[in-house]
Length: 531
Image (tube, rainbow, N blue to C red):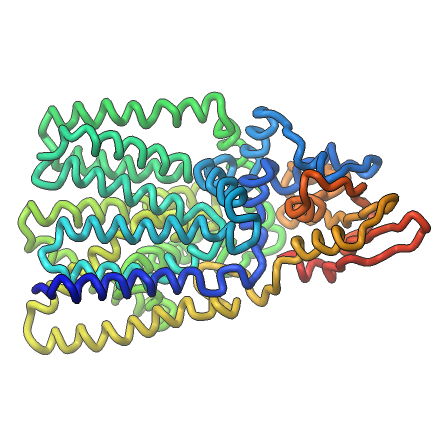
Protein backbone atom coordinates (compact mmCIF):
# COMPACT_ATOMS: atom_id res chain seq x y z
CA UNK A 1 0.00 0.00 0.00
CA UNK A 2 1.43 3.35 -1.08
CA UNK A 3 0.39 7.01 -1.02
CA UNK A 4 1.46 9.71 -3.45
CA UNK A 5 4.84 11.31 -2.88
CA UNK A 6 3.42 14.81 -2.39
CA UNK A 7 0.98 13.65 0.28
CA UNK A 8 3.67 11.46 1.82
CA UNK A 9 5.99 14.46 2.21
CA UNK A 10 3.37 16.70 3.83
CA UNK A 11 2.20 13.97 6.22
CA UNK A 12 5.80 13.25 7.20
CA UNK A 13 6.48 16.96 7.73
CA UNK A 14 3.33 17.25 9.83
CA UNK A 15 4.36 14.32 12.03
CA UNK A 16 7.86 15.72 12.52
CA UNK A 17 6.43 19.10 13.50
CA UNK A 18 4.02 17.36 15.88
CA UNK A 19 6.90 15.44 17.46
CA UNK A 20 8.93 18.63 17.83
CA UNK A 21 6.00 20.53 19.35
CA UNK A 22 5.34 17.80 21.91
CA UNK A 23 9.00 17.94 22.98
CA UNK A 24 9.49 21.72 23.19
CA UNK A 25 6.11 22.84 24.56
CA UNK A 26 6.69 24.34 28.05
CA UNK A 27 10.26 23.04 27.82
CA UNK A 28 11.72 25.52 30.31
CA UNK A 29 8.64 26.38 32.34
CA UNK A 30 9.39 24.12 35.30
CA UNK A 31 12.65 23.95 37.21
CA UNK A 32 15.36 21.39 36.70
CA UNK A 33 15.09 18.73 39.38
CA UNK A 34 17.96 17.20 41.34
CA UNK A 35 19.18 14.66 38.77
CA UNK A 36 19.03 17.24 35.99
CA UNK A 37 20.98 19.76 38.08
CA UNK A 38 23.59 17.09 38.71
CA UNK A 39 24.05 16.62 34.96
CA UNK A 40 24.23 20.37 34.31
CA UNK A 41 26.72 21.02 37.12
CA UNK A 42 28.93 18.24 35.84
CA UNK A 43 28.58 19.11 32.17
CA UNK A 44 28.80 22.90 32.36
CA UNK A 45 30.79 23.64 35.53
CA UNK A 46 32.95 20.49 35.76
CA UNK A 47 31.87 19.80 39.31
CA UNK A 48 29.55 17.29 40.92
CA UNK A 49 26.82 17.95 43.45
CA UNK A 50 28.41 18.44 46.86
CA UNK A 51 31.85 19.01 45.33
CA UNK A 52 34.03 22.06 45.94
CA UNK A 53 33.91 21.43 49.68
CA UNK A 54 37.45 22.73 50.07
CA UNK A 55 36.80 25.93 48.11
CA UNK A 56 33.60 26.62 50.05
CA UNK A 57 34.78 25.74 53.56
CA UNK A 58 32.92 27.77 56.23
CA UNK A 59 36.10 29.54 57.33
CA UNK A 60 36.78 30.77 53.80
CA UNK A 61 35.18 33.16 51.33
CA UNK A 62 35.11 32.72 47.57
CA UNK A 63 33.96 34.54 44.46
CA UNK A 64 32.28 33.41 41.22
CA UNK A 65 35.72 33.78 39.63
CA UNK A 66 37.00 31.12 42.06
CA UNK A 67 34.06 28.88 41.15
CA UNK A 68 34.81 29.13 37.43
CA UNK A 69 38.60 29.00 37.71
CA UNK A 70 40.20 26.16 35.69
CA UNK A 71 41.09 23.28 37.97
CA UNK A 72 42.85 21.01 35.51
CA UNK A 73 42.05 17.68 33.91
CA UNK A 74 42.57 15.74 37.14
CA UNK A 75 39.91 17.76 38.94
CA UNK A 76 37.47 17.31 36.06
CA UNK A 77 38.04 13.55 35.97
CA UNK A 78 37.47 13.36 39.70
CA UNK A 79 34.24 15.36 39.43
CA UNK A 80 33.07 13.18 36.55
CA UNK A 81 33.80 10.06 38.56
CA UNK A 82 31.95 11.30 41.62
CA UNK A 83 28.92 12.58 39.71
CA UNK A 84 25.67 10.72 40.29
CA UNK A 85 26.12 9.03 36.91
CA UNK A 86 29.65 7.93 37.89
CA UNK A 87 31.33 9.17 34.74
CA UNK A 88 29.06 7.38 32.29
CA UNK A 89 27.58 10.36 30.44
CA UNK A 90 30.61 11.93 28.83
CA UNK A 91 29.00 12.65 25.43
CA UNK A 92 25.90 14.16 27.01
CA UNK A 93 27.98 16.31 29.37
CA UNK A 94 30.05 17.60 26.46
CA UNK A 95 26.87 18.53 24.59
CA UNK A 96 25.53 20.35 27.67
CA UNK A 97 28.71 22.42 27.74
CA UNK A 98 28.40 23.19 24.02
CA UNK A 99 24.74 24.20 24.32
CA UNK A 100 25.51 26.38 27.36
CA UNK A 101 28.17 28.16 25.33
CA UNK A 102 25.88 28.57 22.30
CA UNK A 103 22.50 29.25 23.89
CA UNK A 104 23.09 30.06 27.55
CA UNK A 105 22.43 28.05 30.70
CA UNK A 106 18.65 28.35 30.88
CA UNK A 107 16.63 25.24 31.65
CA UNK A 108 15.17 25.10 28.13
CA UNK A 109 18.65 25.30 26.56
CA UNK A 110 19.94 22.47 28.75
CA UNK A 111 16.94 20.26 27.96
CA UNK A 112 17.28 21.04 24.25
CA UNK A 113 20.16 18.55 24.10
CA UNK A 114 17.68 15.77 24.82
CA UNK A 115 15.16 17.22 22.36
CA UNK A 116 17.79 17.26 19.63
CA UNK A 117 18.92 13.68 20.21
CA UNK A 118 15.36 12.34 20.40
CA UNK A 119 14.41 14.06 17.14
CA UNK A 120 17.55 12.56 15.58
CA UNK A 121 16.44 9.16 16.88
CA UNK A 122 13.10 9.55 15.09
CA UNK A 123 14.98 10.53 11.91
CA UNK A 124 17.18 7.41 12.13
CA UNK A 125 14.08 5.24 12.69
CA UNK A 126 12.42 6.84 9.65
CA UNK A 127 15.47 6.30 7.47
CA UNK A 128 15.75 2.72 8.71
CA UNK A 129 12.06 1.96 8.20
CA UNK A 130 12.18 3.13 4.58
CA UNK A 131 14.69 0.38 3.91
CA UNK A 132 12.85 -2.59 5.40
CA UNK A 133 9.16 -1.73 4.89
CA UNK A 134 7.60 -1.91 1.45
CA UNK A 135 4.80 0.54 2.23
CA UNK A 136 5.40 4.23 2.84
CA UNK A 137 2.21 4.26 4.94
CA UNK A 138 3.90 2.01 7.51
CA UNK A 139 6.98 4.23 7.47
CA UNK A 140 4.71 7.10 8.47
CA UNK A 141 3.06 4.91 11.11
CA UNK A 142 6.50 4.32 12.68
CA UNK A 143 7.10 8.09 12.78
CA UNK A 144 3.66 8.61 14.36
CA UNK A 145 4.23 5.96 17.05
CA UNK A 146 7.65 7.47 17.78
CA UNK A 147 6.19 11.00 17.92
CA UNK A 148 3.73 10.07 20.68
CA UNK A 149 5.83 7.48 22.53
CA UNK A 150 5.52 8.63 26.19
CA UNK A 151 9.10 7.73 27.09
CA UNK A 152 10.44 9.73 24.15
CA UNK A 153 8.33 12.79 24.97
CA UNK A 154 8.94 12.81 28.73
CA UNK A 155 12.69 12.21 28.60
CA UNK A 156 13.09 14.77 25.84
CA UNK A 157 12.16 17.33 28.48
CA UNK A 158 14.87 16.26 30.91
CA UNK A 159 18.50 17.38 30.86
CA UNK A 160 19.65 13.81 31.40
CA UNK A 161 21.53 11.34 29.25
CA UNK A 162 18.77 8.87 28.28
CA UNK A 163 17.78 10.52 24.98
CA UNK A 164 21.48 10.80 24.10
CA UNK A 165 22.24 7.13 24.71
CA UNK A 166 19.04 6.13 22.90
CA UNK A 167 20.12 7.98 19.77
CA UNK A 168 23.59 6.45 19.64
CA UNK A 169 22.35 2.90 20.29
CA UNK A 170 19.65 3.31 17.63
CA UNK A 171 22.25 4.55 15.15
CA UNK A 172 24.58 1.69 16.10
CA UNK A 173 21.84 -0.91 15.64
CA UNK A 174 20.77 0.62 12.32
CA UNK A 175 24.32 0.53 10.97
CA UNK A 176 24.77 -3.02 12.27
CA UNK A 177 21.62 -4.01 10.37
CA UNK A 178 23.01 -2.42 7.20
CA UNK A 179 26.35 -4.17 7.59
CA UNK A 180 25.26 -7.63 8.70
CA UNK A 181 21.56 -8.30 8.15
CA UNK A 182 20.37 -6.36 5.10
CA UNK A 183 20.71 -8.57 2.04
CA UNK A 184 22.76 -10.98 4.19
CA UNK A 185 25.67 -8.61 4.71
CA UNK A 186 26.04 -7.42 1.15
CA UNK A 187 27.11 -3.98 2.43
CA UNK A 188 29.60 -5.34 4.97
CA UNK A 189 32.59 -4.18 2.95
CA UNK A 190 31.34 -0.59 2.90
CA UNK A 191 34.06 1.35 4.74
CA UNK A 192 31.82 4.36 5.35
CA UNK A 193 29.19 2.30 7.15
CA UNK A 194 31.84 0.44 9.13
CA UNK A 195 33.36 3.73 10.30
CA UNK A 196 29.94 5.16 11.19
CA UNK A 197 29.12 2.00 13.17
CA UNK A 198 32.35 2.41 15.15
CA UNK A 199 31.59 6.09 15.86
CA UNK A 200 27.96 5.45 16.84
CA UNK A 201 28.95 2.56 19.11
CA UNK A 202 31.66 4.62 20.84
CA UNK A 203 29.13 7.42 21.28
CA UNK A 204 26.74 4.94 22.87
CA UNK A 205 29.34 3.56 25.28
CA UNK A 206 30.27 7.06 26.40
CA UNK A 207 26.61 7.95 26.91
CA UNK A 208 26.02 5.19 29.44
CA UNK A 209 27.98 2.05 30.16
CA UNK A 210 24.87 -0.15 29.97
CA UNK A 211 24.78 0.39 26.21
CA UNK A 212 27.53 -2.21 25.99
CA UNK A 213 24.56 -4.60 26.04
CA UNK A 214 23.58 -3.30 22.61
CA UNK A 215 26.93 -4.54 21.29
CA UNK A 216 26.46 -7.83 23.13
CA UNK A 217 23.06 -8.16 21.48
CA UNK A 218 24.50 -7.46 18.05
CA UNK A 219 27.16 -10.12 18.39
CA UNK A 220 24.65 -12.53 19.93
CA UNK A 221 22.68 -12.17 16.68
CA UNK A 222 25.82 -12.85 14.69
CA UNK A 223 26.59 -15.93 16.80
CA UNK A 224 23.12 -17.30 16.08
CA UNK A 225 22.72 -16.47 12.40
CA UNK A 226 25.94 -15.32 10.68
CA UNK A 227 28.43 -17.86 9.31
CA UNK A 228 30.29 -15.66 6.85
CA UNK A 229 33.94 -15.47 8.03
CA UNK A 230 34.64 -12.22 6.18
CA UNK A 231 31.77 -10.48 7.98
CA UNK A 232 32.99 -11.79 11.33
CA UNK A 233 36.55 -10.62 10.63
CA UNK A 234 35.47 -7.08 9.67
CA UNK A 235 33.11 -6.73 12.63
CA UNK A 236 35.55 -8.15 15.18
CA UNK A 237 38.37 -5.85 14.05
CA UNK A 238 36.05 -2.83 14.27
CA UNK A 239 34.85 -4.01 17.67
CA UNK A 240 38.46 -3.74 18.80
CA UNK A 241 38.50 -0.08 17.70
CA UNK A 242 35.33 0.49 19.74
CA UNK A 243 36.61 -1.20 22.88
CA UNK A 244 40.10 0.37 23.00
CA UNK A 245 38.96 3.84 24.18
CA UNK A 246 36.28 2.25 26.38
CA UNK A 247 38.76 -0.02 28.16
CA UNK A 248 41.25 2.88 28.45
CA UNK A 249 38.48 4.93 30.08
CA UNK A 250 38.07 2.18 32.68
CA UNK A 251 41.81 1.90 33.32
CA UNK A 252 42.85 5.57 33.35
CA UNK A 253 39.64 7.58 33.22
CA UNK A 254 36.79 8.20 35.69
CA UNK A 255 35.29 4.80 34.94
CA UNK A 256 37.95 3.19 37.14
CA UNK A 257 35.88 4.45 40.09
CA UNK A 258 32.63 3.17 38.62
CA UNK A 259 32.42 -0.20 40.36
CA UNK A 260 33.32 1.33 43.72
CA UNK A 261 30.61 3.96 43.45
CA UNK A 262 28.10 1.38 42.25
CA UNK A 263 28.91 -0.83 45.23
CA UNK A 264 28.51 2.13 47.60
CA UNK A 265 25.19 3.06 46.00
CA UNK A 266 23.92 -0.52 46.34
CA UNK A 267 25.05 -0.64 49.97
CA UNK A 268 23.41 2.63 50.97
CA UNK A 269 20.16 1.77 49.19
CA UNK A 270 19.76 -1.63 50.82
CA UNK A 271 20.69 -0.11 54.20
CA UNK A 272 18.12 2.66 53.76
CA UNK A 273 15.33 0.31 52.77
CA UNK A 274 15.99 -2.00 55.71
CA UNK A 275 15.91 0.93 58.10
CA UNK A 276 13.07 3.01 56.64
CA UNK A 277 11.01 0.63 54.53
CA UNK A 278 10.23 0.59 50.83
CA UNK A 279 9.47 3.62 48.66
CA UNK A 280 6.74 2.22 46.36
CA UNK A 281 7.52 2.51 42.69
CA UNK A 282 11.19 3.33 43.22
CA UNK A 283 13.08 1.65 46.03
CA UNK A 284 11.74 -1.82 46.83
CA UNK A 285 13.18 -5.14 47.91
CA UNK A 286 13.98 -7.51 45.05
CA UNK A 287 11.26 -9.98 46.02
CA UNK A 288 9.80 -12.35 43.41
CA UNK A 289 6.60 -10.26 43.36
CA UNK A 290 8.41 -6.94 42.86
CA UNK A 291 10.73 -8.40 40.23
CA UNK A 292 7.78 -9.88 38.37
CA UNK A 293 5.94 -6.55 38.35
CA UNK A 294 8.99 -4.61 37.15
CA UNK A 295 9.63 -7.15 34.40
CA UNK A 296 6.05 -6.97 33.15
CA UNK A 297 6.04 -3.16 33.28
CA UNK A 298 9.31 -2.79 31.36
CA UNK A 299 8.40 -5.31 28.66
CA UNK A 300 4.87 -3.90 28.30
CA UNK A 301 6.10 -0.33 27.93
CA UNK A 302 8.28 -1.30 24.97
CA UNK A 303 5.22 -1.79 22.78
CA UNK A 304 2.50 0.59 21.65
CA UNK A 305 -0.21 -2.05 22.08
CA UNK A 306 0.62 -3.03 25.68
CA UNK A 307 2.06 0.20 27.11
CA UNK A 308 0.65 0.94 30.60
CA UNK A 309 -2.04 -1.78 30.43
CA UNK A 310 -0.73 -3.24 33.70
CA UNK A 311 -1.57 0.10 35.36
CA UNK A 312 -5.02 0.40 33.81
CA UNK A 313 -6.09 -3.20 34.41
CA UNK A 314 -3.74 -4.57 37.08
CA UNK A 315 -0.72 -6.82 36.70
CA UNK A 316 -2.64 -10.07 36.27
CA UNK A 317 -4.65 -8.85 33.29
CA UNK A 318 -1.68 -6.83 32.06
CA UNK A 319 0.43 -10.00 32.04
CA UNK A 320 -2.22 -11.94 30.12
CA UNK A 321 -2.46 -9.14 27.53
CA UNK A 322 1.33 -8.96 27.20
CA UNK A 323 1.63 -12.72 26.73
CA UNK A 324 -1.16 -12.59 24.14
CA UNK A 325 0.61 -9.79 22.29
CA UNK A 326 3.94 -11.63 22.33
CA UNK A 327 2.25 -14.77 21.02
CA UNK A 328 0.86 -12.77 18.07
CA UNK A 329 4.32 -11.30 17.47
CA UNK A 330 5.79 -14.81 17.45
CA UNK A 331 3.18 -16.04 14.94
CA UNK A 332 3.76 -13.05 12.68
CA UNK A 333 7.58 -13.07 12.79
CA UNK A 334 7.58 -16.83 12.18
CA UNK A 335 5.57 -16.25 9.01
CA UNK A 336 8.16 -13.88 7.52
CA UNK A 337 10.91 -14.99 5.20
CA UNK A 338 14.50 -14.74 6.40
CA UNK A 339 15.19 -11.53 4.49
CA UNK A 340 12.41 -9.67 6.30
CA UNK A 341 12.73 -11.40 9.67
CA UNK A 342 16.23 -10.24 10.62
CA UNK A 343 15.43 -6.73 11.89
CA UNK A 344 12.68 -8.08 14.15
CA UNK A 345 14.80 -10.91 15.54
CA UNK A 346 17.56 -8.40 16.31
CA UNK A 347 14.91 -6.26 17.97
CA UNK A 348 13.67 -9.06 20.19
CA UNK A 349 17.26 -9.73 21.31
CA UNK A 350 17.83 -6.04 22.05
CA UNK A 351 14.61 -5.82 24.08
CA UNK A 352 15.03 -9.02 26.09
CA UNK A 353 18.78 -8.90 26.83
CA UNK A 354 18.80 -5.66 28.90
CA UNK A 355 15.74 -6.80 30.85
CA UNK A 356 17.47 -10.08 31.74
CA UNK A 357 20.60 -8.20 32.78
CA UNK A 358 18.68 -5.69 34.93
CA UNK A 359 16.71 -8.55 36.51
CA UNK A 360 19.95 -10.29 37.50
CA UNK A 361 21.46 -6.99 38.74
CA UNK A 362 18.38 -6.36 40.92
CA UNK A 363 18.62 -9.85 42.41
CA UNK A 364 22.31 -9.28 43.15
CA UNK A 365 21.71 -5.83 44.71
CA UNK A 366 18.67 -6.90 46.69
CA UNK A 367 16.67 -3.85 45.54
CA UNK A 368 14.81 -2.74 42.41
CA UNK A 369 16.36 0.75 42.36
CA UNK A 370 18.06 0.09 39.00
CA UNK A 371 15.30 -1.97 37.39
CA UNK A 372 13.59 0.66 35.22
CA UNK A 373 12.81 1.10 31.54
CA UNK A 374 15.20 4.05 31.28
CA UNK A 375 18.13 1.64 31.75
CA UNK A 376 16.82 -0.63 28.99
CA UNK A 377 15.41 2.05 26.71
CA UNK A 378 17.54 1.25 23.68
CA UNK A 379 15.03 -1.50 22.82
CA UNK A 380 12.20 1.04 22.37
CA UNK A 381 12.73 1.72 18.63
CA UNK A 382 12.44 -2.02 18.02
CA UNK A 383 9.27 -2.06 20.13
CA UNK A 384 7.81 0.50 17.74
CA UNK A 385 8.95 -1.50 14.68
CA UNK A 386 7.33 -4.64 16.10
CA UNK A 387 4.14 -2.77 17.02
CA UNK A 388 3.72 -1.33 13.51
CA UNK A 389 4.70 -4.60 11.85
CA UNK A 390 2.12 -6.55 13.85
CA UNK A 391 -0.57 -3.98 12.97
CA UNK A 392 0.22 -4.50 9.29
CA UNK A 393 -0.05 -8.27 9.81
CA UNK A 394 -3.46 -8.00 11.52
CA UNK A 395 -4.82 -5.78 8.75
CA UNK A 396 -4.25 -8.68 6.35
CA UNK A 397 -6.57 -10.89 8.38
CA UNK A 398 -10.37 -11.12 8.39
CA UNK A 399 -12.48 -7.94 8.51
CA UNK A 400 -13.39 -8.37 12.19
CA UNK A 401 -9.74 -8.43 13.17
CA UNK A 402 -9.18 -5.24 11.21
CA UNK A 403 -12.12 -3.43 12.80
CA UNK A 404 -10.95 -4.42 16.28
CA UNK A 405 -7.38 -3.32 15.48
CA UNK A 406 -8.51 0.16 14.37
CA UNK A 407 -10.74 0.65 17.41
CA UNK A 408 -7.95 -0.48 19.71
CA UNK A 409 -5.50 1.80 17.87
CA UNK A 410 -7.66 4.85 18.60
CA UNK A 411 -8.22 3.87 22.23
CA UNK A 412 -4.53 3.16 22.92
CA UNK A 413 -3.44 6.37 21.18
CA UNK A 414 -5.74 8.31 23.51
CA UNK A 415 -4.37 6.45 26.55
CA UNK A 416 -0.74 7.08 25.61
CA UNK A 417 -1.29 10.78 24.97
CA UNK A 418 -2.91 10.95 28.42
CA UNK A 419 0.34 9.66 29.91
CA UNK A 420 2.44 12.64 28.85
CA UNK A 421 -0.10 15.48 28.89
CA UNK A 422 0.50 16.05 32.66
CA UNK A 423 4.10 16.87 31.72
CA UNK A 424 2.96 20.30 30.54
CA UNK A 425 1.46 21.23 33.92
CA UNK A 426 4.03 19.31 35.99
CA UNK A 427 1.45 16.98 37.48
CA UNK A 428 1.97 13.28 38.21
CA UNK A 429 3.33 11.61 35.09
CA UNK A 430 4.83 8.33 34.01
CA UNK A 431 8.58 7.75 34.50
CA UNK A 432 9.25 10.65 36.92
CA UNK A 433 8.42 11.65 40.48
CA UNK A 434 8.92 15.42 40.26
CA UNK A 435 5.64 17.36 40.48
CA UNK A 436 4.37 20.86 41.24
CA UNK A 437 7.59 22.67 40.47
CA UNK A 438 7.87 26.39 39.90
CA UNK A 439 10.59 28.19 37.95
CA UNK A 440 14.20 27.27 38.70
CA UNK A 441 15.08 29.29 41.84
CA UNK A 442 18.82 29.41 41.27
CA UNK A 443 18.92 31.77 38.24
CA UNK A 444 16.45 34.00 40.10
CA UNK A 445 18.75 34.08 43.13
CA UNK A 446 21.75 34.87 40.91
CA UNK A 447 19.87 37.75 39.26
CA UNK A 448 18.84 39.12 42.65
CA UNK A 449 22.44 39.02 43.88
CA UNK A 450 23.66 40.83 40.76
CA UNK A 451 20.99 43.50 41.28
CA UNK A 452 21.42 44.05 45.03
CA UNK A 453 25.07 43.35 45.81
CA UNK A 454 27.31 46.29 46.63
CA UNK A 455 31.01 46.41 47.32
CA UNK A 456 31.75 45.34 50.89
CA UNK A 457 28.71 43.00 51.08
CA UNK A 458 28.90 39.26 51.64
CA UNK A 459 26.56 36.70 50.14
CA UNK A 460 25.75 33.93 52.62
CA UNK A 461 24.45 30.54 51.49
CA UNK A 462 22.71 27.88 53.56
CA UNK A 463 24.01 24.35 54.11
CA UNK A 464 21.13 21.86 54.05
CA UNK A 465 23.38 18.80 54.61
CA UNK A 466 20.79 16.59 52.94
CA UNK A 467 22.08 13.00 52.91
CA UNK A 468 18.84 11.05 52.81
CA UNK A 469 20.43 7.81 51.65
CA UNK A 470 23.42 8.10 54.02
CA UNK A 471 26.12 8.12 51.35
CA UNK A 472 29.52 7.58 52.93
CA UNK A 473 30.91 10.29 50.65
CA UNK A 474 28.61 12.87 52.28
CA UNK A 475 28.68 11.71 55.92
CA UNK A 476 31.63 13.80 57.06
CA UNK A 477 30.98 17.00 55.14
CA UNK A 478 31.40 20.08 57.30
CA UNK A 479 29.08 21.98 54.97
CA UNK A 480 26.82 21.21 52.04
CA UNK A 481 27.82 23.59 49.22
CA UNK A 482 25.05 22.55 46.83
CA UNK A 483 23.01 25.77 46.95
CA UNK A 484 26.15 27.85 46.52
CA UNK A 485 27.21 25.71 43.55
CA UNK A 486 23.83 25.98 41.85
CA UNK A 487 23.71 29.78 42.23
CA UNK A 488 27.29 30.27 41.02
CA UNK A 489 26.44 28.25 37.92
CA UNK A 490 24.41 31.29 36.81
CA UNK A 491 26.92 33.93 37.90
CA UNK A 492 29.67 35.17 35.60
CA UNK A 493 33.35 34.42 36.06
CA UNK A 494 33.87 38.19 35.96
CA UNK A 495 31.66 38.76 39.02
CA UNK A 496 33.60 39.56 42.19
CA UNK A 497 30.93 38.96 44.83
CA UNK A 498 32.33 37.85 48.20
CA UNK A 499 30.51 34.67 49.24
CA UNK A 500 30.58 32.07 51.97
CA UNK A 501 28.56 29.09 53.21
CA UNK A 502 27.08 29.14 56.71
CA UNK A 503 27.19 25.58 58.18
CA UNK A 504 24.36 26.35 60.65
CA UNK A 505 21.84 27.93 58.27
CA UNK A 506 19.65 25.59 56.25
CA UNK A 507 17.28 27.54 54.00
CA UNK A 508 18.00 31.27 53.50
CA UNK A 509 20.27 32.97 50.98
CA UNK A 510 21.31 36.31 52.49
CA UNK A 511 23.26 39.43 51.65
CA UNK A 512 25.00 40.83 54.71
CA UNK A 513 25.64 44.51 54.12
CA UNK A 514 28.79 46.23 55.32
CA UNK A 515 26.66 48.26 57.78
CA UNK A 516 25.30 45.08 59.40
CA UNK A 517 21.94 45.06 57.59
CA UNK A 518 20.78 41.61 56.41
CA UNK A 519 18.71 41.18 53.22
CA UNK A 520 16.97 37.87 52.60
CA UNK A 521 17.38 37.07 48.91
CA UNK A 522 15.54 33.74 48.94
CA UNK A 523 14.23 31.14 51.35
CA UNK A 524 13.94 27.47 50.34
CA UNK A 525 11.14 26.87 52.88
CA UNK A 526 12.65 23.76 54.46
CA UNK A 527 13.60 22.35 51.08
CA UNK A 528 10.25 22.99 49.37
CA UNK A 529 11.97 24.84 46.52
CA UNK A 530 14.95 22.49 46.18
CA UNK A 531 13.25 20.50 43.45
